[in-house]
Amino acid sequence: MTMNNYKILDWDTDFLGYKVASIENGCVTQNDFHKIYDELIQLNVKLIYWASDSDCAHQKAISIEKNGLLVDIKTTYELKLNASNLTTPLSEINLYRNKEASEELLSIAVQCGEYSRFKIDPKITHQKFAELYRTWMIKSVQGSMADDVIIHKEDNEIKGVLTVYIENNVGNIGLVGVDEFSRGKGIGGKLMKAALSYFMHKGCERVQVVTQGKNEAACILYEKHGFNVSNKVNLYHFWLD
Image (tube, rainbow, N blue to C red; front, side, top):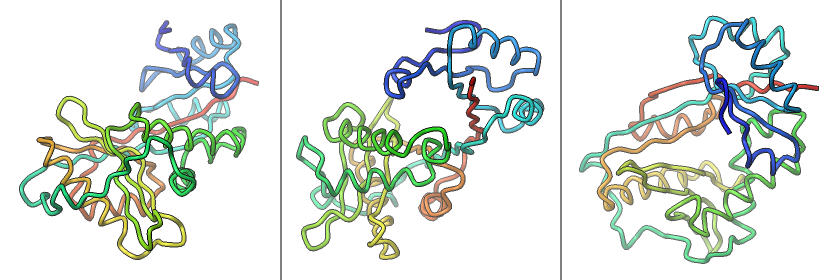
């Protein structure tokens, strides 16, 4: 439901167990924010998301006045594909074919959320944060949140995972994670090369991925493989209680 520059988020509301809304305008004045805020109080909204434009002049004052928590600098990376990205034959890209997520995958999925706003926000329980990322992986292997799940295995155990989907001929990377006990071995790079080759084989012209600005390891991985930042927004949580 969309009204007056905000949207009531049905999925988030059902998942978290209280009404959640997002402000759709990336830069609003303090006066307009007050109006939206007061209206959402009347609708019994408990949590507001606001993706503020990084150059919005009003965000600092609004966040101070309304106790907004800056939970993420949402960073979008893009890469234009070319022949140099086709480094892994399709037959060598290891895809997870089971429609049921293994415990290894679910564990790595939760680790993917280390810098997630749902983990950073102290008012969201760890149980809900973990459930969110497990659900993301379950839906990915089932095909509703990913076209394929690329995995890296060592000693017959899954050590890394990267989910992919294609939309309007653009390749998208979703979850990316390496098990905490297997990091520093170049697994992330192998997954990335496999993903870029996957998208080339599928005829994509470019790839994009959204990550948390504080996730330095992820940012370094994308930049190492030629990605450039295309957009940044400051993501705030406002609690109405």
